[in-house]
Length: 383
Image (cartoon, rainbow, N blue to C red; front, side, top):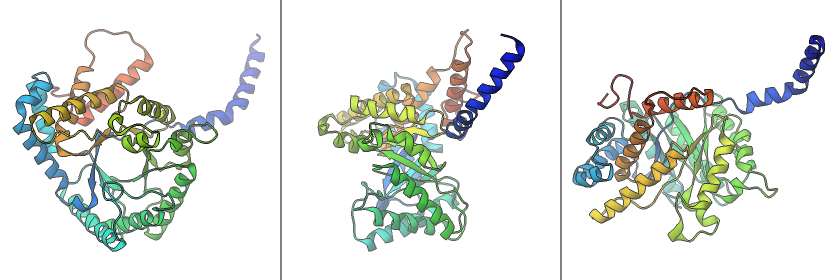
């Protein structure tokens, strides 16, 4: 082909693909560069106070001290890893925290929930001012389904108003939108967020939210399309994450209670759809929780820790770098599994240079350093 013809063809393709090029950049901007939490700790609103994050670390350390031999056995007698976990529990035990006004709180009279909203917002402000709040935090309010819509919006508005007190929204604040069943609900959440920002004189776009994927309708629409992909793009840049809801999703698709788990095939299908929908968008993924808790006698602690270690490792291997934790005793195994994953994955020796692999490795090392698994100065010591 003559150079002039090739140039003309190139110009034609540029014109034909101009819109697609622009859409690709708009819809798939890539990561934000903000470190992702390794977990989200859910605390019922009436149990939250300004010392909750610190208290979780203290309780986790106490459980670790009581069952140290068992913990060492489960992590392969790795004392360096044990000390790294202890260091993290002392310095930053909770990465991300949600004050829960939904399932963990239940349905209560309006005056009782209003009082809990005010108390929890005041406690969070105190923790932020004292420097004891986690790097990120927020609330989960009741869903925008018709039966809970009014109460959920009232809690959201009241909490944001009480937290800001006429000032800006704290940078670490994010809310969780649960039980989403339609793209319309995501669009309604965007609409509500904009009105709250205007009414409370907040920075436009500052009220961000996560979509909790815990209904089959959010995975598969009536037309057979993956609605979760449309939900991300309907969020107008406000969606920061997709969080899988283990037990609600399992129940909705008819899985018996004894078999509801993060590693059920139905869960893997939902999370694979979430993963494909979020890829390249900058929206982060979080796995759900396990309710097999390491509390009680030594046998119960063993079962809880073994289960949690296995499930956290499994999630990490599948590209879910965050999950839910429901109890302080789960923190030791959360950090042990996470740190071991990153420390084992550091490259050793020569390897084939491949651009996609190099990018993935660079991202992997950034995640490992950000969570505290290792650092550039000392990969094994405290620091």
